[in-house]
Every structure is written in C-alpha cells, then in structure tokens.
Image 1 (cartoon, rainbow, N blue to C red):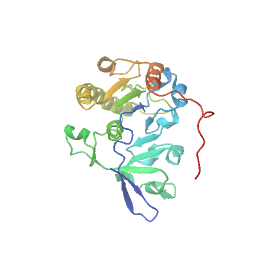
Image 2 (tube, helix red, strand yellow; image 1 turned 45 degrees about the vertical axis):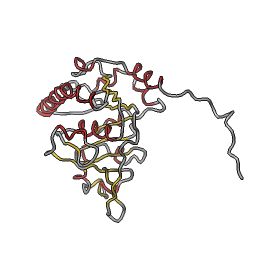
Image 3 (cartoon, helix red, strand yellow; image 1 turned 135 degrees about the vertical axis):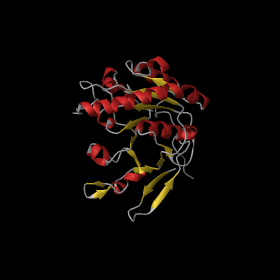
Image 4 (cartoon, rainbow, N blue to C red; image 1 turned 90 degrees about the vertical axis):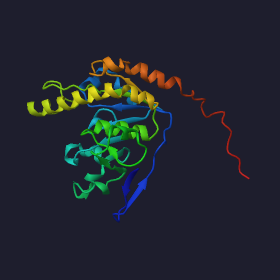
Amino acid sequence: MLYRYNQDGSRIGINLNGLYAGQPCFITGGSPAIHEEPIEKLSTASNVFIFGMNNTPLVVRPHICVSGDVPKCFDRSILHDSGIIKAVNIARRDCKVGKKTWKELSNTLFYPSSEKLLQSDFFNQSGPFLWWNSTWWITLQLAYRLGFTTFYLLGAEFKIRKDHQYAWETGLTDKEVQMNQNLYSKEARKMAELKPIFLEHGITVVNCCRTSAITESYGYTPLEQALANVKRDLPESTGAADLPHSKRK
C-alpha cells in the first residue's frame, strides 16, 4: 500500500499491487559505470518501464523514482518533475521543499517502512516495506509488489572509490566514500544470498553492469541484449492506417 495526500492534508491509500504483472523492468543505479552502456538507447526505448533511485533521473529519466532520504539530498528538478512518480519514505512527508512540504508536491506517493521486519517479510504484498538502510531494497520490493518479474539492473555496481563516485558530479569525503562502500559490500553479499529466494518467488534478476560486484552471482548481460530480450516479447506495431474507425450508433 502506498499513500498520497490531498491538498487538505487527508491521506488516501493506493493499492498498485500487480499493476504490471509479468512484465520486465529496468532498475537504474548511480554508479558511473552506467555510462559504459549505451544508456541513450534505454532512454528512447518504447514499452520499457524504468525505476530510478535518488538522483539517477539526472542520467536516465525513469517512470518511478524511489528515495529514502531528506529532500535536500536530491536535485530539485527531480522533486518537481510531474512526469515522474516519486516514491518517498512516509516519514519524510512533512519535510520542507522550498515553501511546500514534500506531501504537497505533485505525483508523489509515500511508502511506510519498518526496521523490525524479517527477511521473510521482503516478499510481502501488503504492509510496511522492509528497511535495510538502503533505497535499493525498497526499490526491489516495490518492483515486486507492482508485479514485475524480470529486473534488469543497470549502473548497479555496488562499488565506489574516491575517483569513481557517482554517475553525476559529486564531492564525497574519504569518510563518506568508505561508509558507502561498506554499505554496498553488504548489499552485494545480500544480493548473492537472495538469488535462490528471488527465483522461488518468480523473479529473474539480470545484471547489466560488467564491473558489478554481483557479476559472479548473476553474470553479465549487455544493455543492448537486455533491450533486445524485452523487444522480442512485444508485438510489432502494425500502424494505424488500416485500423477500423469507431462506429457511432
């Protein structure tokens, strides 16, 4: 269950479970390695659903952008982009974004989360999302609840260095880089651990980052091949010239 807020402050629950049942999606991470793939082909591809996280819309514009931190951590152009659904931690709903609160911004939905849930709760279809101190896990859970069954991971390298930080300009300190690397290492180990569990729940994870720390567990599929796989299962356009016109009584 996700929530949105009306202008009068009232909250409305929205159930989007299974909305994209059986469909593939692309999940974009913020590693600079994302630029090693022809990401312009993803940006211009039709019939492809894209998840972004945090500031990744600066590189590839997604359909949904998931975040867990306070709004000052994100580019304002993302927060105010009405064409992107923003999935935000509900604990941040009253944070100020300029003169408004986050819950007043357009096309913004909020998810509840809990640190007290167990790993077995990761695949729940209702209730709070399991919070493992990372937007990464919220994004995977949201994709699962929405019904996606194939996750193509792009720019998810699970690595960071002082001279190799993010796909956009940053200036993290040595301490911040080390803190992030510790988190990414844990995520990579957990991804390897979860692989058989993903398969049990009907989820296929495809790694599209050649230098990713999960390549040993998930292999590597170039982005162009991933896009070809998705296109293969889609019907060809027949054009509109020969379509029948609607009939009026």
